Image (cartoon, rainbow, N blue to C red; front, side, top):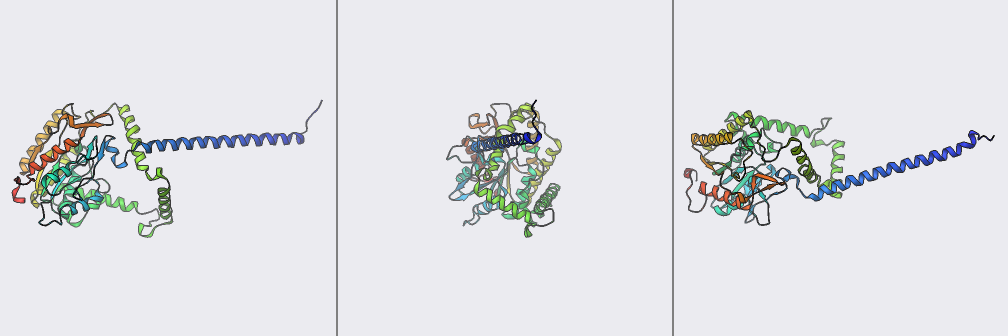
Length: 399
């Protein structure tokens, strides 16, 4: 009987162990390689969908359109742009034309089924009036935010005329979003202090300012004025990746594509909802926003601004996503509030016919219409405010 000593068997065992370890390492590397390649392919796929990050909430069928007339930009929907657009809108002209503003949500700057040459509301209104009619808007803006923007505009350059679109949908929103605190100023606060709604807005603005300052401060209490090592390293890596990797540079767009193409669809499938689903209105937010509207009306009266409050167009070829009785009651309440305050009121609900509306990701879009709808709304606003040549303003004392 032949036996193998442990010493003789050891080299073979070591070789087998080495081979097994090598196979395991190659397998791990292969799995990592496949994972990285798959992740890269997924990221590249979302990148190529081509949805801009700032348009994710609008849906894939709507396009934000920057409006300019004779080299003068006449619309803005990001707070960083408000000052330059509002200050540049005819302020330096001689003789100075009326300072005209339309305040609203994404309906003012988004064109459904956009094609080159389409003009949004402020551009059409500007051409019809013969002077800048500036569109200042925020997606899904609530009336508390409109109150802040109006107070900012009064502090910056008082509008002579203001058209305010009041959207039933947006009465569900509450508070002041991040970024609007940059509109804060002593004069703006002075105007807001005149109403309970304005004072609540100041409180929200102060919270946003505190959040921004907290974000600028690292764990050791080092502020941006004296950057910590961590901040310097993060800043270097951010710039290095931004300059060399298009997927990093466009990561907001990829997240937008993920949200629009899959996350939103998953939510709708799980909860069985679509753009026509009727959602309840929260009474506390409704009342808070309607109180803010009353504060806007009061500021307009006190500051001599000709104010038009209008109900925006709503498509009528399908049932809207509102409780019909509640929506009708709100429109009646809005009209009554305007009469009580002596404010011009218009119901543009049926203004845009069905063929000028569009879609939102394959579903019905109740908020955004095509270029023809923008033209109809702009012309209606100009006509109602008497902004065209030879037209009489309903508030002639302010013109």
